[in-house]
Image (tube, rainbow, N blue to C red):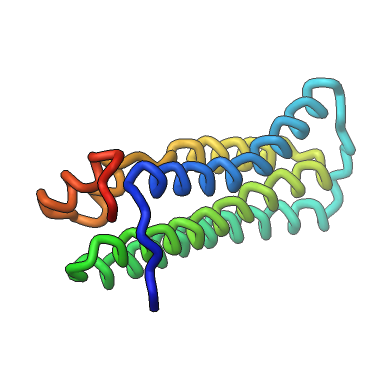
Length: 164
């Protein structure tokens, strides 16, 4: 696999752009759901199917988040021993995309569960997942910590003009 050379600044910008693109849709959907709730949106449809749907949404949300963490750690553990910083960063980006996809899906499912059922538990779950997602904002320090970079790799990643 040929890896395209880039600067650390461009790499960090690409990671942050990916993050913002993934977090944008769930945040907008959640904002719409909260707006609807604040303005009296309520289906008051408490049929058994709605409770089953909420249960499924909670189960899938928890499963998505835990599997996202598991897959993310598994991928990073495989690449930590690589001597090539650029390869580590490309694999790190792939692991982030997988993790973000699972979290985004969980947040969207919870928001849809609220819109379908009108159950405030689903709205609270979607808000909690969205807050968790927002807390995952990527920084150079988080990348260094998650990849266990050595001192030379840390210096390269901190230098915005360094070619990786």
